[in-house]
Length: 190
Image (cartoon, rainbow, N blue to C red; front, side, top):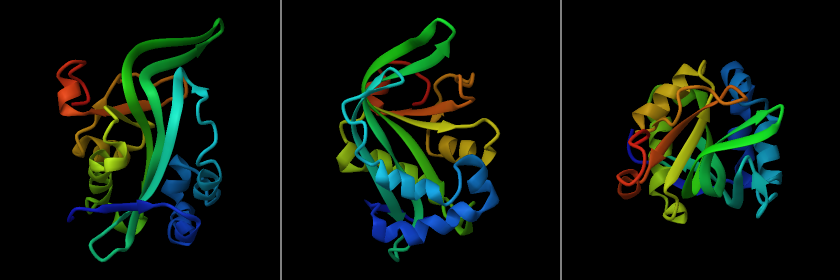
């Protein structure tokens, strides 16, 4: 697949993305058609607040466009002041492995008609190259271990598990670090 470009995800783009959430696999891993609409309504909620040991700095939401300007994927997430591993225990939250940010937590979905053609890998590559997140040093895609297609997509884009053990919600975070930053931190996740 050729290089993809990103455009803001707006209410006008909702009809292009929402039908993907009728697909059983998309529904299984992300939820039903209400998911992208809910994301739009919450786009700027929680700015400045703490979320799982990280302060929310801003949010981004895009669609990925192919060379013919057709929407092939939706991607977005929050940018935080740092990255850390968070878990909940009977004694309260525990934060480990904190490292400086900014860091971005990502969620993405590819048009089911485009699965297997490189649109997911191209979307993740477009995100890490996006000027609006040029300050982000750690990108984290949270993936359930059973979502083999998403794991393959993230690893093909250069992401690697920050910790192979799922967190308290059963999620493994696949990390991609900017090359200059990666040489000064962990060697996992590039």
